[in-house]
Image (tube, one colour):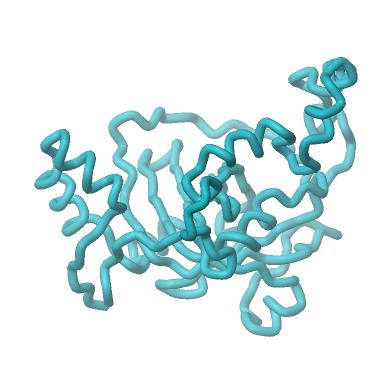
Length: 254
């Protein structure tokens, strides 16, 4: 697969590169390291990973970062331009999937802390499929190795960018045996109220009613106060189109 270099990076990246004198160095990285697909080494790397960090944002740019883990290969490589991973029953919030429903752009970070001590960024556009639909369209999807567990749905990512995360500051770790309670609803085994959030809930009763009822989303009134400061909340017409996701950055055209 041959890629033709085009202008890459966001407008913000380019502006800061010019301001700080890093444009030439950045261009070398774009030209030498950024692909619009997964090459064979990247595919092999992804298939060996047991974890991935996932970044999403809603239509207004409010971000969420999460973590997914499973047996090696739980992120299924359909081909050089498509990845899929299973979603299981969780706390019911569906934050990442909700963001994807508004804004298709996602950022993935695969980190190998044990063997190669290297990382791989994969950026792309995501859709969500129910398990039955995903298996109908991709019959080679693996059967879950955990007895009795089944994916509820799958996240499908069409790759737009793939590039290295350098090893310089990645710590080397040693893998230790640990029994993982996949799919458990046991509060203690899930970590319980480790950060004391449940214990601090009564504090909400002391807040003014107007602040408590400002919004029914995760961020509450504070979230919407922040949104009011965004350009498109101040009368501009360039409101993001949820169906299209955020404006695409420059890519390598294939």
